[in-house]
Image (tube, rainbow, N blue to C red; front, top):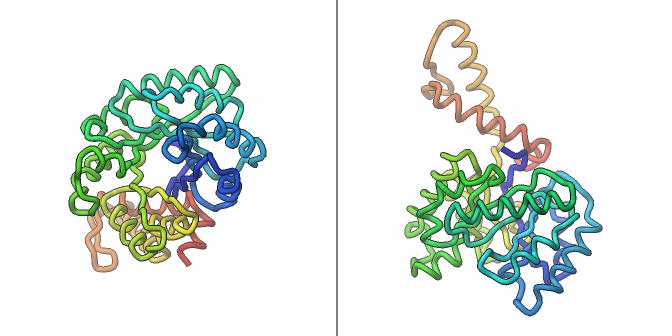
Length: 294
């Protein structure tokens, strides 16, 4: 598994050099530069040039740099991939994945790209945006070692299925994506919150996604990045509780005891794993996570 937390993934169009330059300054976990839905068909070529100019000046850092390319069924996919040659990107986001065979093809295309410019380790994030993609989510997540996450693309999904855009209606679909991701050892990233002015609704949506097991969420505006990152980070109370739980459990194990009570709650091996997971996440994102939790 990669070291990228991907709590917040900011999506920005490659069609606007001004927006792209601004996005490169935002403190998100991942920046996704979009050559697909955010770029009109007549502007694809120019958007690739904008992308190359912006990333040629980008400074490598701890932020993940991703590019969402056009899908295999379009006439733009191969040109998008060739435009990435020599650029300092970490990950390719692939849209409208229908089944594992799509990931097989992308895996080989990235291998060819790596051979062309001598790099290694390009990763894939798979957008699940259709009923077929949801049905095949488990096999998609396992189709390539490059695959690091499943992302729920809600817009195309509801356009195809006619489902309502509300939490209860989409609950079974989102749960299925999380289960497939966890079973495959990859991350599950939740869909966008389209109302950029609705900060309270964004926080509620992010909290609901976290409760389902999503580890991050897409942002479509810089103002959404901080609230999303905060929700998907353990706060100070959670970190302190996790440390107490782990310390008490380890002491009990040394003394030959099994399940114990910490802060009035029963702690067994399952609770220990939850505490260890929270503390591991906090340590991965420190000192940023400590600042957000304060």
